[in-house]
Length: 412
Image (cartoon, rainbow, N blue to C red; front, side):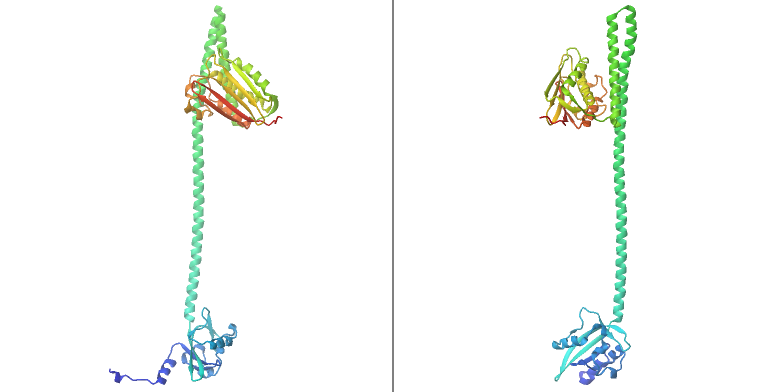
């Protein structure tokens, strides 16, 4: 088909084609806000016949709940330009039967001579709005489901974390229990080993000496008889010490011992105690006592005596004959200090860390009688009086134990 064969439409025919057959509603409003033209799509949209719209104010198509539209129309007339109406707002049109429908409106102003007009292009977006509502609802439902799933995950995670925490606690408790069980088994082993050795030796000595005492008595050997009687006494004393250590440890473990302080003269008290201990010394051993400072103290003298007897008897036991043992006491306004110094075998460096453990005995003390409980008991007694115990020691050069206890008597 050539250009000459294409049919041409007049301007009126073009306008009619566009206006009458457009799928969106078109309404033309004059400067007074009256409808001057409406196309079939707009009439169908609002349910009016053309005769019912022409000459009527455009406000008849706008729900009253949106207020006075006249003001908005006049404001637009002051600065007319092509634009969408009600940007950012939900617009609604009112049908003849009063039903409201969501619409989208675009405005285009034009002039014809001296007259000003506005063309309103109107689209029914009911289906779109419904779809948007459906999508919004689905989104909200999905969000609610996501929130619920998130909550369930968090709850489940919390439950799992609590379970893991409990499992970790159980593991730690089990580990502690196993360590305690291991420690208990070690203590049992040490106790059995100590008891079998420490009880067997003095008992064997007592039995053999008893038979010899009887024999020497029959033949009149008084000196030999006295020697074995002394051996029996020594063995009985040793057994008594073992039982006393066991009893003290048991009472301390059960919390049956507590400090009951009273006022006394520490210099006189320790002097008397040393006189008793002098009877346990080896040939040539002497116990020297030195006191400095005030003499009145407020302590549990029974606990103090147990501490002193234990430390001094150890000094006697682990020192050779003719080596002196020294006891020092110092009382000032802050603390009471007690030192027990010997010149004995000392404590190997590798044993010093374990010295206050129950049943522990140093490598160089294997052939010397003892339960391995004494220093553990001393440490517990010192703790009962809120004190501290430390020591300094070198092999073959002796040991000094230092006890410091708070002084609750403030002297002038």
